[in-house]
Image (cartoon, rainbow, N blue to C red; front, side, top):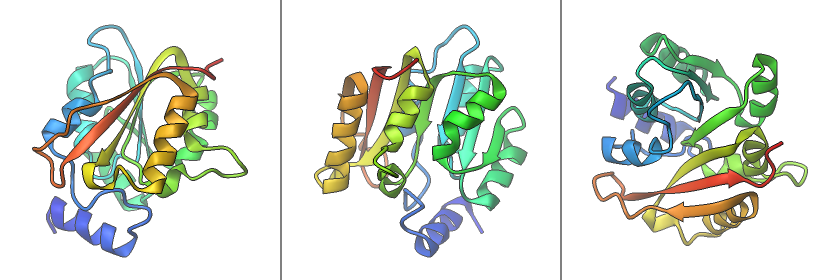
Length: 196
């Protein structure tokens, strides 16, 4: 089964936990990894890497530097990601475990790149996932999330944008990436308010 067909099958099996109907384009991936520094040894965390469209772009940008941790809920994809990208620490885990996983490793994230579906962002015990991400970032850290243009006006998307604006000092929305199917935008949030 090809990558696109496998992605579509996972989406059909579990549309609420698979964010996309197919792998993201290289154009969208470049928007998503833009905050990954070109120098130094940054800690980059990827939430919901799926089949690795953003993973590949992050690895290209890092060029062997830093640390790259990927949290994937789908066990098959987590295993395949680890095999395909040996430099990536691929962990089968829920994104809400991010603070604990970083603490165990003595790390703070410089950049978090998210390919998660809206359902993952729903508050649990009143705490939205974006707050946990903000608390896991270094003071000058950045977070990126993509959304399809035709879904940006849905209530979950509006709630997510409100959460981003509440948790970060700056939130910017990219121009539409037309070279993605379906067309998408990237949200870039910088300087978490809750970083400690």
